[in-house]
Image 1 (spheres, protein in one colour):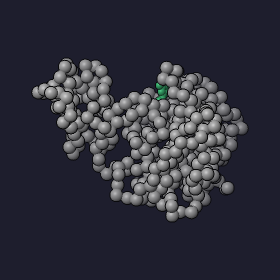
Image 2 (cartoon, helix red, strand yellow):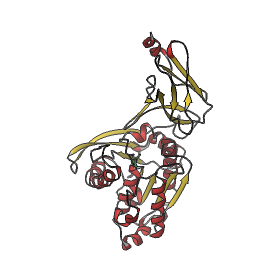
Image 3 (tube, rainbow, N blue to C red):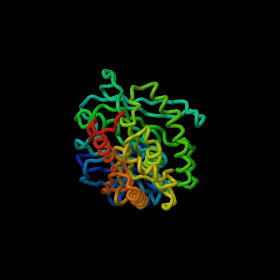
Length: 360
Ligand code: FER
């Protein structure tokens, strides 16, 4: 009987800006909704046939994550197919309201998924590439942005949860940015092992990412796509673990990238005293940085568990007189923050007129 009811229930039910959650759990003693971004836990009420229900709202338009807590055990909503499905699985729901990440009635670009030969790691690796709506009619080489994901994610996270391709469609339509190619590599060239220490894993992973990105992925993309080879038209950005990768690889390879974006970065890793060493930089490099680095955009939320690292990193940048822009924003370590950072970063990337770029 519960199985039949479970097959019929609708959860979550989004009605305007109210959301009702439902779960059939006849033997449960306590059911809550937990982890809704910016909201306290919601106690659900038990009704007939073991059907638990709870309603929250009105909520601001946003994409929210949540889980059920059934007698203390965290579960996804079994009636909801919209799931963030990486290292940790989380149920999602969306309240629409004309936000920049929504599917507007505008021309859309194309999203490609490739498996390329990664000689440096000895396996084939995945990458997603977004080409703008105008791509087939343009003949110029387009600017390109490399966008890296976090520790718990893969190359599909930035589009599925981050809505990066929708955001670009809309920004391009609004003419706030020109047509651009977006490359979303897989950020785990080192095999993920959650039992390993994160900082140790992430540092080793950066070295492998460096080889894979420069020796394998870039040549693959240069063969397949009309993308600029000029550093002033290439940006590198990432969130969390990917922010750490963007910082380290961006600063080290300013001959490849002239704009760096760091969203809630996990770098520096471990020891805050040896950042020079971690970034593999010395006095000569600090000086040359400012002449080639067009934009160094750093964002971190006030409630982010990585804020301390970001503050140390920004302090280090100041001590080395490396130009940067640090945005200390509301929010924690979550996608509501990163979608906004992506919009702010992309518009900042294209804010400077071409004439201010360094010469070819
Ligand atoms: C940690 C520091 C940072 C950690 C993870 C991160 C697992 C990064 C998370 C991310 O990329 O989202 O100690 O432990």
